[in-house]
Length: 81
Image (cartoon, rainbow, N blue to C red; front, side, top):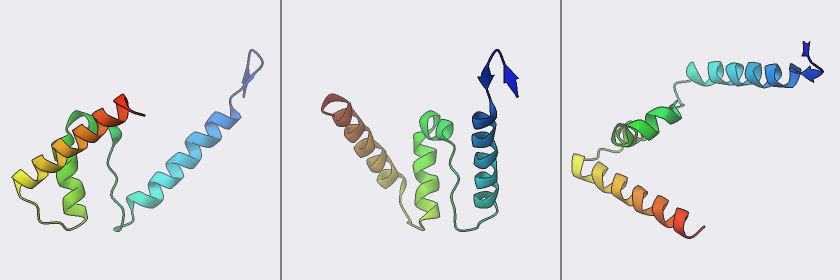
């Protein structure tokens, strides 16, 4: 497909391969699919899902501690790349 001299085939190929990869992982019981938007919008829930997937039995306080530590690391990384 071409429009004004631009080729869209590489973009379509990338989208197709991403969808195929998603399908492979979505049917696999050994994979956790966690949308980026979910991790950004609700990080506590995302941390809980990751802990559950890894079969860690964390209390609510432990999950909050993980979240706070992650925030401190992210801030440090932004300040001192």
